[in-house]
Length: 79
Image (tube, rainbow, N blue to C red; front, top):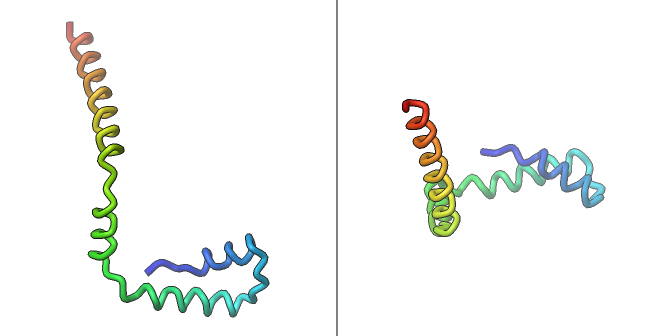
């Protein structure tokens, strides 16, 4: 379970909420308690539902170009 206190503290500072440390700690614990019921499988399912085929294809193309360049360099060195 992530520790949400630093996030709550940063939000308090950025937005000038004026919460005391005790209030921030209680809020962070409440948020953490709400998150306890979430399963890891749910998070993975959420991510898999929002795939980015265009981005994945772009990464694949870049990696292919890098591999081709490395192979050409190795062939040139061997010759």
